[in-house]
Length: 339
Image 1 (spheres, helix red, strand yellow):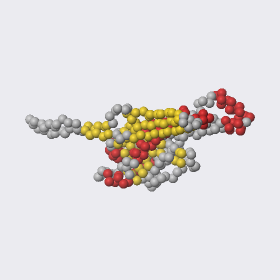
Image 2 (tube, rainbow, N blue to C red):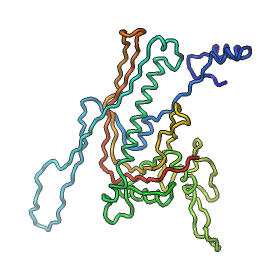
Image 3 (tube, rainbow, N blue to C red):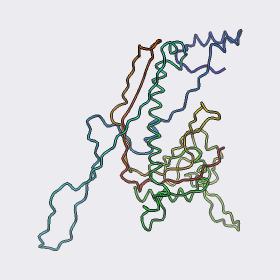
Image 4 (spheres, rainbow, N blue to C red):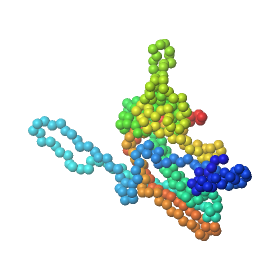
């Protein structure tokens, strides 16, 4: 039986549990209950999406963009026209939102309900839930900048591809190549390729090789390595496995963010919470995600009910600004077949 990962269980207690297990299985089952901790997304992942920073209360929530002065062609002896010195920039302001997470429990059950109901555990879970929702808000916001409705209307005339690319049932090399080229042009370089492991699973194959014309008459071509490795070094490993992944670099992009699917284990079968039907190719310096001040907390006991009720709440202000939407491409696919 798996030992609960509770730091308060000392080696001496574990030894005592082991002695009980030798003589009384039923008693051991009553003593030990296994709790499955949820897997959380954290703001560390968000840093791969775009620039993030924490602003303090009192900071001016404005982003300024300086303009350029005109340059003239002159001839010798010319009295050059001057421009009136003025502020030649534009300013954009952040719009802030607030997220909150709150939990409460009566003190009687909290004192006797086991390690998953201790204040320390609840505080940790509340903080993790708040970070996860912040990350999901950022991811969903970027995923909804470009849609089939607006991308065709806003695509620059003459551009080879749009900021919204309709893919096939799975990610393809042609769609990803077009997205990378588009982002490189409009933002200078690609900051990250982001998607769930399922959405990026095909990269494990086409990201390792490409077919080139053979010397012989074989019509299918021969595979040549393109993953910064020598030929004939393809790795037949699962795209869902732990690192190292078969593809860590693709066409000069070294930041490939494969987000592990997270599940709501209270449902049966477990309910996947992250969308598998798109991949984002994000350029450098296309925008910024901020938190305004630290996460605030309040903790109190309401003594009116009997037994008293313990309450804990945490909230945080945040905002996002996107000043170069052309540097973001969404490759949308139909929902892939789950493994």
